[in-house]
Image (tube, rainbow, N blue to C red):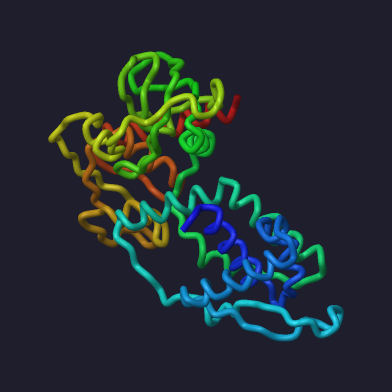
Length: 322
């Protein structure tokens, strides 16, 4: 399915799902961007095709009369009770793929178009409920500010520049990158591409990018080499080590799901807390992850991991104080 068509169908579903009442066809034409650009006859054909396609996908579209303010015109909606799926479970790999898709939707143009459509529904007096949208948006934590600009640069093949902080260095270094792609590797987000400064393929953890990411030059400034496998490049560029540590982490009940999912064991601890044993390769990465849970996770062992978490939290406090 073409990206633009997917976006149109998604926005149509959202408009019909958030409205508590039937939405007239004329209003849908105003709300969905692709519909606005069509002549009346072309819009009618496109709308009918879209309805049938959604129904073929198992999305039930109900037809009924709208409120009296629209002179009993026919309208459309999707009942939440008929749309929702039963509870689903995913493997860690499946959750990563879904998380990436959700992250892109949340930050790219689709989110902007969706927000405009929902606002217009409310402005026109139609009662809306946005809680059903949670069924459309699986999430994987990805709060790095660098994610969105680098993702856009990947899409447009635009060179980016940024300051990058590596462990053990005295300060950030300026880098220039042709970004080939973004992936989630061992629970962290990375950009992979051609480093112009090093004239080599490099992988950059997004959480270590400091300051803002700047676009350099115009779109379509580079091409991705044929046959490049981003995940294979990540495996090749990751530090080669067979050393695996086991961390003991105290996790508050109902929190730390990422740690719990990877844990080799989770045992009850003091009231309201469990202890998760998690294997790890990169102590710095694990320390950053634990710190991200704030007061919901406490590193117990090994001691150097605990100290790394404390240093990371102190560093965050310094940055906030600035």
